[in-house]
Image (cartoon, rainbow, N blue to C red; front, side):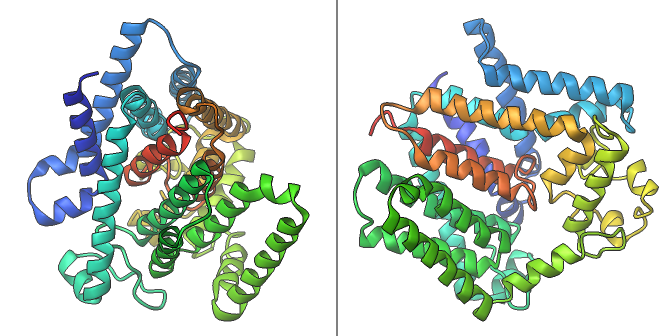
Length: 408
């Protein structure tokens, strides 16, 4: 693919990541359709590549199999029988994998361009954090974004939601540790500052998911080294216990998590993510083993779903205003695709991981890639990682950069 194609693709990606920002500073309607344009362009790149090479990678087969399965099963057995709804929802559900395939095709041999692009993305995101930090609630008023108080101001920067910003904090830490590992050096002062900066961003965004994700990131990344070294292993255990103790003493993280879990075992729950997960557990039994079908639960085309009516929740605020019902990809997958869906997505994630290793790994192993896949999967519990373009387009370049060990 030509350089012009890659520049166009990266430009659309930047517009999609900061869509909320561009819509705030201009009334140009193009930004309303940046994500859709990027997705269509991704399909064009994918099909042109297939026609040119006349062969499919395993991840391509996995994606096309899922699309065919989702459409056929949903039409035959799903509660939503509208063909257009089912097709579009099926594509949206695996948008992340489509973007990943396209990034690999375009930047496999042009990683320098991707590194520069993502450096600009992170720089712009950090500028937004600094401005929000300096202006406080004035920034919220001017930018037109809620304070998301819990109980104080939660920072968003140029993003729409504080959880987006928190994920950037996780990425900064992951990229810093990955670079240190690849270069086989100790963490420098600059590296520690980046890690502390990432933690500070997470704290400012007040994301409980991101705080827990950091623990998963460190555990997964250092586990192989830790369990082989007795001193390091016990140091790891000590630091974990100390961190847990400090969180219990100085934050309400544990209590808030306990409260959310306790509120997740009833259809009367006011914790929407817990409610969605609870209903998905009921659906996996009720519609065993295939689920209720695409566009019926926790997804864009399920806005007036029969599922919500059957559970008697369709008149509640969350479902009328469509607030928080799209936040959990795990709930949506379990509800719409049932028991079989769990295995389908395990297969998709596995083939995506292997595709990155095959295309970008040199003689060295990328320890951080597996760690970040675990973090991504964990975020899917309470965030729309697969279907939200901000999360997907922040994640995919990072996966490629981390997977790339050929030049190291």
